[in-house]
Image 1: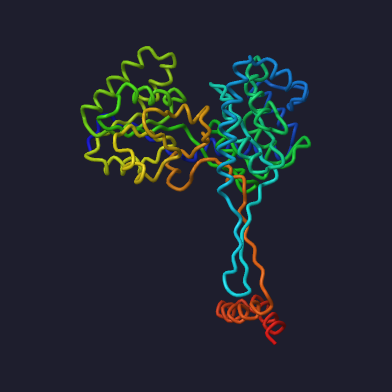
Image 2: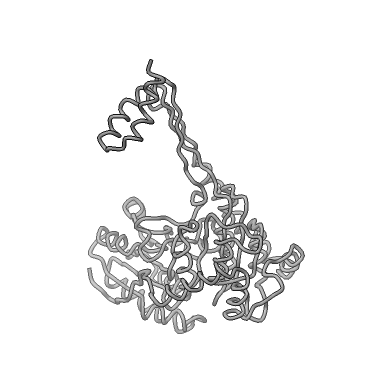
Length: 422
């Protein structure tokens, strides 16, 4: 391996100052309820409407502010997300099997009842995030989705976001951001039922709030700054590779990028393209800071080393611009979502193609995938037995419990042996 450019790969690390700050906020929010929600909304967002929840009329007005093309495009994107979620759900079957005579074991998939969905705003109004958390939840069968999105300074809300939230199937829509939004959904306030699960991305305060609220309710995953990894051999187009890397670098100065190529010549060509494209990129200030600080460019000795390097980095998004696609497809293990060939790009997955863009970052792709319809389902087991089977299993269970010195456990088995074994 040869390093052409090295940069940071930011892992999700607990920031003690942020952790303490969020913990104190959550304590106040839990104690003071909506009074604290209003206090923090005024303090951080200068936002204090009569009601944070939009009425049906206000939602209709917001949708009416969206032009026809935007509505059509949003419908197109949401139809793709919904179709893929439905097809994923179709792969999840209940199970029932007679594992031994008279012993029936099974599982069933049960949706959670209430989900809190956060649709981020910030620098970019990422209204496309609405369908990524709301649609899979509704396809899974979730009864109630409470959706929050932060206010836009001076505007109140972003009409495209409200349109996307409504069309995705949100049952209630709140214009509320930050830690206070997660507290509203997690604890249940203002006639909002407490969420069984929270999902959606945000800044470091939002990520820390989700971490601390885990246990109070479930969460989708902890997502830090976005990442892209690219593996490129000499058949790839260096200009296209550079374009895709910068497409993710514009997210955030802390975004991570890694390019693993198979020759030094290609690496240098891609680096030259990156510098060239940065000169005219409208979002250069963010993308250049991100690439300069966090970008990595490595030359692998061969395909297997390229795979090993990328698996170790475990990127949120992974593009492969290679001639031998099956070789890489069969062997790569650690990524949030895989983009195969130059015909596809991360932006397709982020916005319109149908896969989910809420994905693991900071190497958590080593142990989890991204958000999908299955995240909103609990796979719960059950068992039933005939009297004869109960007596037979009971004898073994009695002996096992006594070895563990759990006498009361043993008695529950023993009484069944006595009852059914005669």
